[in-house]
Image (tube, rainbow, N blue to C red; front, side, top):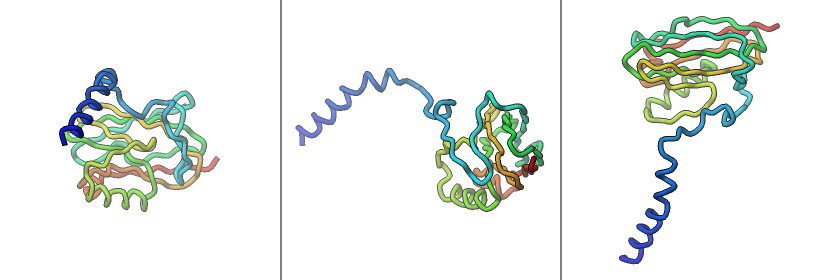
Length: 163
């Protein structure tokens, strides 16, 4: 047993400099690290291609402002997400069905981590960003899927008009 504890301690000490050097670096979310995967509602966009910025306010009244948007198919939109509330909020783009399924999962696993390019967690008083290319026409949705928020009506709609 002493041998096993010694080996574990040696492994910990041997990796300590790398852990310290790593510091508080944030993982994911960098432009080079964005996973571009086609979804029913579009694909991750490049910030340099965004020709439109939409500022969205989130608050503890469980609403987005604006909550009804229209974009043209092919548009890349930068969403600047301002959390004016005292609670954490998130912005997730998807279909009604997928958002409802994800909201149900969030109730079971409220501390789920997210790293998809179509979603952002925004701490109170902070600003987040999502850059998205709407390359498919249709009606899509966005919501805050944190437990209780979606059920309270924290959702909105995006109409993507065909060119």
